Image 1 (cartoon, rainbow, N blue to C red):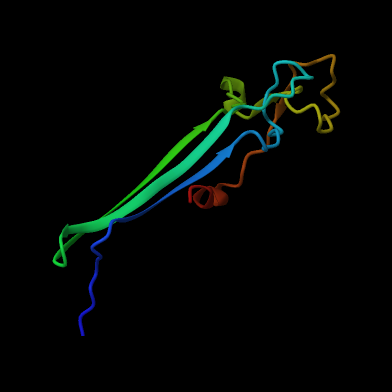
Image 2 (image 1 turned 90 degrees about the horizontal axis):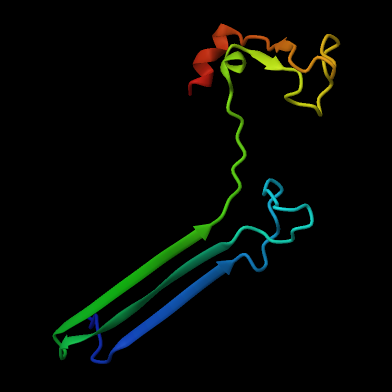
Length: 130
């Protein structure tokens, strides 16, 4: 038994999925221009497409095509810590993380006093490279 794989009529469909920043909440790490600024970075995501099928030669040849598109635009805040030479050697200044309890030899009056960060066990290094 053989069934016909096409039709002598033109058929098609289209779709569009939209997401934007109108209903999004503010990311905790987004930087505001002013503390009272309610704006959030712009965000737009469009996923769209369509399909179209129909006859090339009646009852003999058929054509079907499909297209899908994706457009994405997102504004992000990028907050990064760039270590200096002292930090790369494990010497961190006392005021790097003010929310954590400071060591007894580091007071706010001595902000440049280095704090040694303990070295990792050398047996753990192969696991950290995974």
